[in-house]
Image (tube, rainbow, N blue to C red):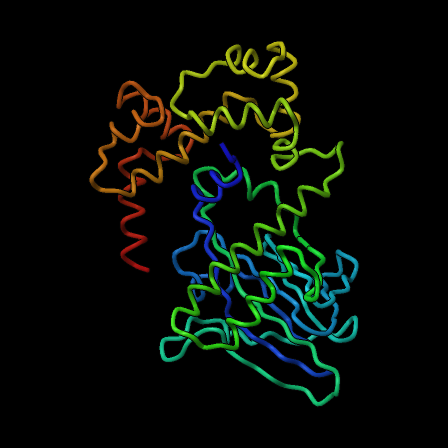
Length: 326
């Protein structure tokens, strides 16, 4: 079981590339908190965050609140901001401007991406920007483990997988071929996943968090078991035995990495899967519960309400209303 892929599918990671920007210095582009316009660009997503892929030239990336040192971006680099933070890309450090909220909307009379070309200098900075959306409820262990900023270094002249994706984005953003928006959306998802893989590979061995837990031999094994068989009758003793640790050491090690005890993780992941199944009106509440290991509808109702804050029937109705309004 590929745990990361399982989680990304369950939380419905989706992407879109909106902007193909070519700037000449001096220039500055400031992005407000994505919560200010998220429903305009990805109306179906619970949480939206942005990313930028530098195709040519170099620039600086900064958080506008000054809480992080400036990051130098070069051709081939990708930077993403998983949390709701206002940030700036600029040709010279410290430049600021007021963002134009009117540009953050999904077009109905043209294809994505929007193309801009401005500035009067001789140097060129070319990048594509877009958004990634995902569900955060009932349970998204992946999102909670992400930092405020993710930066992956690459090279458009390199031979790596990320470089290949960047080259493809260049081709698609300028090609205006049929199906281009869909291809760019999938490329956005693939580039972000590769950024995550690089981030995980670079984490210090002593780091904590769900992503670090994937690398740990014992915790990673337990996560694969839970995600591979979510409806199994898991117990703390059973999981500890499967991964070759004592009950107490396994519980301590799992909680150290994942931040919640193993059996809480099992319950929460079951709720995430059940919530997705409840979106299908052909699946009964009892069936959704049975598919994640609950023998009775009453037990499933109690567990779901305790964690989510509402009964599964109310969650289903809430989701149906939300989808009808998108």
